[in-house]
Length: 427
Image (tube, rainbow, N blue to C red; front, side):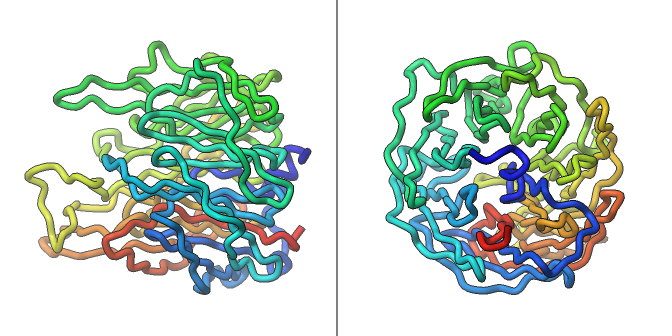
């Protein structure tokens, strides 16, 4: 079994993928080959990464059975597991799969590794446990999870039967094994109230985990979970702190990771992810801890009306109109003794809705994947800002400096997932 620090070096990617914890800021670049992947519609495109030049070079794409939803590497870094679906927000779809790809050791190029495995409904997140023996998948509607064995050759095996009384909450969104691999956390987001339906509560479910079987352990939430809409979490590399992005309230919660793999019943700290609460038109998104544990990065996502824009919303060339993108990467400094977060920067995303972002292994470069183009009305003029990949330099103080943006033509699709992986020979 991999230890916590070794596993954490494998990927820093989207939504809550593990960060590259062996890396330390200030290491020399060029020694480690990185691969970056971007999922737009049914295509997952590979990019070479030049960390010293802070640049991406587009390579070839592989095809998925339907639109990319999420991806996660095997601990060996030899395989990437990609979930896909013909569904989306408010759409159930009828094709749902998870597909294994082999990662070329020299280049990071992807090749199909076995046949796609059919899933029961739309998968919104997937991950691999710390041993590399199980693939974990979440489903939002109906809320649920599945666990699949990973064969010794890296292909996907049989599904592991789970207890019928498993508490999967409402709108399962992210599933991750804790560092000990004895427990698994499941984020259940809940839903905002509508004109015809009351709010659904959110929660963090903690399950015992043994031989691929999940068992109910605890539900961590304030009160009855109302007013609590978590999305993703990430773990400190060496301290017992767990950082949770609260999507529907634009907040950051900090919990204590307990010795038994559970979370403290109450958060240690709660803080806002935005500087002006009166302008709350964005939602908190992916969250990643810097490899040195001194900083936490969290995306505030705006500039997207979803699959069903509200009646009466101004449109321009088929896009909803906003006065600004309301999108940034929030940077928090972390007190290493208490876990207390302090907001030190909100770095403009230079586009709309950074749904995913990731670090390179040396944690000197951050790339944010912008979901969709957006129409902006500014000073009476209309501008369309394309979707894209925004590249930042990470300073020794944790702050981000904008380097460049690569426009990505998403057409009628979305750039739903992006992430960086170290190919397997780079150890």
